[in-house]
Amino acid sequence: MPVREIAGVQVDFDAEGFMTNPDQWNEEIAKVLAAEEGISQLTEGHWQVIHFIREDYKEKGQAPTIRRMNKVGNIATKDLYEWFPKGPAKKAARIAGLGKPQGCV
Amino acid sequence: MANQIEKVSIIISRGSLEGVYPGLIMANGARMEGIEATLFFTFFGLDAIMKKRVNKLKVATIGNPAMHMPSLLGVLPGMSAMATWMMKKQMDKIDIPPVDEFLEMIKDAGAHLYACKATVDMFGLTMDDFVPQVDEIINVGKFYELSAGAQIIFT
Image (cartoon, rainbow over all chains, first blue to last red; front, side, top):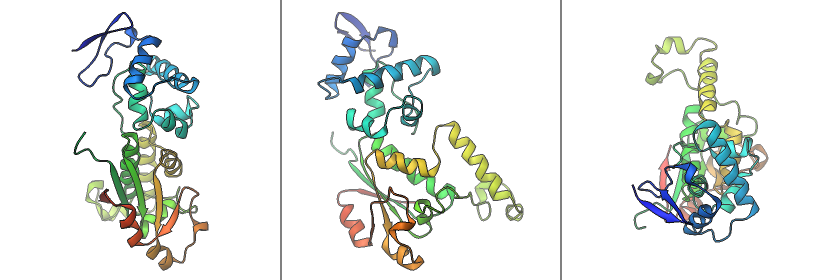
């Protein structure tokens, strides 16, 4: 398991670059991971998504689907694709310090 | 990355619930992976994008060995309705939306939806018969044009 030091924290990752311990996450880490995904600036919209999926993860034990982000998190699918281009569910989960989403939708 | 799939064109040719969902799931899944996706509805697949029928698609209970029941039972009244109800319930459990909502989600995800001109002419339909997510009625030639560089998947 690769360990990287980001913003002064030792962070555990899996082989695909997803964090394995969501408790190690903080907003500074999110900014670094976002930059790695090609998102140079996290806007209010990005944070809304990140905070929602972290909350939902705490409750459900898995990262939410895009439908759930829409229905429960009130996040428009169009916005999601705009804010996290080329793979919104995966990118948002990675930036939020969660594992890779396992669902098909 | 080399050899990564960058574009898919998915043809939906059947009008049963189990005939329509796989193509929709694959199109949505493509967009989720950042892959361009085009959906082409042809023949009975058009039912999936017709306002009148989009939410009335049924599971076929006869001529389907995977239903694991004798075809004779499949013809009984209510069998298809029951199988349809069961499938919809299971789908909802794993967060797969009803067809109309799924089309909206796929469209919002940036995919394009087209209706096959030959079938539209055969059934005497117009754009007014279709849900608003349908971009255009196109012929086969245009479909191939739009599919340049794509993997074509027939369902």
